[in-house]
Image (cartoon, rainbow, N blue to C red; front, side):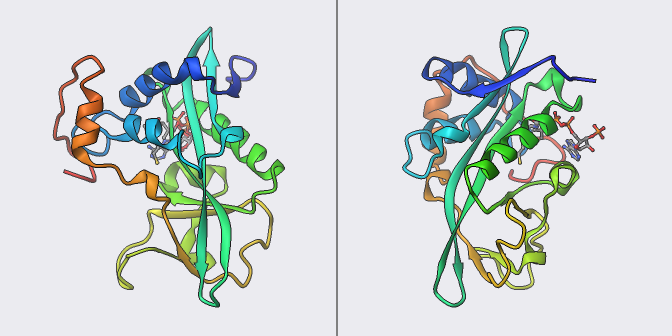
Length: 209
Ligand SMILES: CC(C)(COP(=O)(O)OP(=O)(O)OC[C@H]1O[C@@H](n2cnc3c(N)ncnc32)[C@H](O)[C@@H]1OP(=O)(O)O)[C@@H](O)C(=O)NCCC(=O)NCCS
């Protein structure tokens, strides 16, 4: 039971470093040796597509234990329309409090706020095991393809949730990841040097090695 044990609020400038450190700690060695998400977040905040009103931190006992951010992007529809949607992340919860319901609470709250702002759908890359609990489904079920993915490739990593029911009716097309998510490895490791040393490990289950 985690009710009333936390608050969710907008991130402030003075939180930036603490939040980047949290992201680094939470993602470290999970998907690759080390991680890039703390640098990605650092870059996203200054991007035109970044949604400042949806830049959330979760606080418990006076310290930040989670964060989530959203970016605006588009689906390039087969009939040449561009349909505006949101993408999301990084999202994380501090390592010692994972799997206690905080991630779901933060995500549900963020999605409610995104819906209240009038956004129609959220699409991104993730694990259906977690995001399925918050109403996400495979984007392929909505007829949305992931950019640059061959027809026969596994797209089960690519997820979607309509915030406005029916928003993606008659929308068949290709989702585009905002450019700001693509960062160079050298830039990541350069940025990473400003944090305390952590060992990069090759571990089973990592997606990128
Ligand atoms: C992913 C993350 C944000 C989830 O937050 P969390 O607080 O740990 O998740 P919750 O406790 O709210 O999970 C709710 C349910 O989702 C499912 N779930 C959570 N994490 C999961 C995972 N990694 N794989 C499969 N299912 C998962 C579980 O069913 C869980 O309920 P259970 O623990 O009772 O089985 C958090 O684990 C995290 O920060 N991970 C590292 C960074 C990361 O991977 N971010 C997401 C990138 S797409």
